[in-house]
Length: 365
Image 1 (cartoon, rainbow, N blue to C red):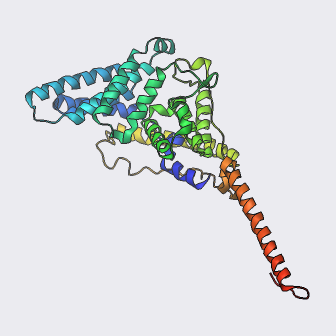
Image 2: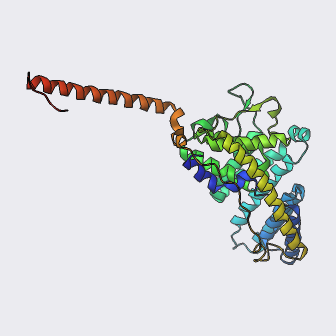
Image 3: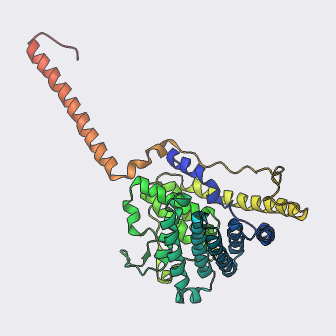
């Protein structure tokens, strides 16, 4: 893998191999604790968010939505009784979380029911828009891309290539500036890091498009491998019109590392699953002893991270992976003309010196 791609991979490698899931056991314990605290401290607005997020992670989105309704009522009560308090941050979290819960509620329905009624998506869109308007820079702008994905799920596209599903970024992904492309990568990676999008073909396809557009072929290929893994597990696109369409991966690795990457990916995924099982066993034993990572600072002290296979390194020719770019050939042609011109110029100067010296003289060039 070329150096620039390896640097990007290092920053988000846990997302590529699946080291992000949360098991219900720890979330149930957290929910029980938070609900107990909420009984004692009903004015602590953050506890409503914590409880609702735990419920949502347990796929109990309707209960999460109801919990946010309780938070809204409590905020209205506090505004009336304590008007001097600034609740703008809590209002932002209310809007962002509630919007996300409505979307997750829609995703959790059976496919036929989900596709027949997009009202929860529309509600989620309105709430996320309001959250962005209140705090556009929260979570490093991640919500902008969350909103983009929600709007895309409701869109009946005019597909520029017959039968091809373009993804939330649309065809514009090919013309993004380097800065905008990087921002979009961080946005979609941020949503995958939250957990649910780790199983989203749509999001990994978007990453594949973004990486391919910036000619990071190895990373694009890794995203494609994750998509193929999800397909084999029976995962499909959430887009209501996806049945009649297919995804297109733009390009392939710009290097000869394809086989090495595939071998590394499948080996590392197996290791990651083994690591997760060991971690859950460690966690279960401590939960059984009444310990919890939220409240015990020494909870993970005895946990040792296993070693993972080393990412394939770049070979000599990998450093010239830009050679497929049309501008490379333009530059190569210009360089060839310059070289021929210099050779011709040197030859003409040598002949001129010979003519000046006349018969019987010689020069050393």
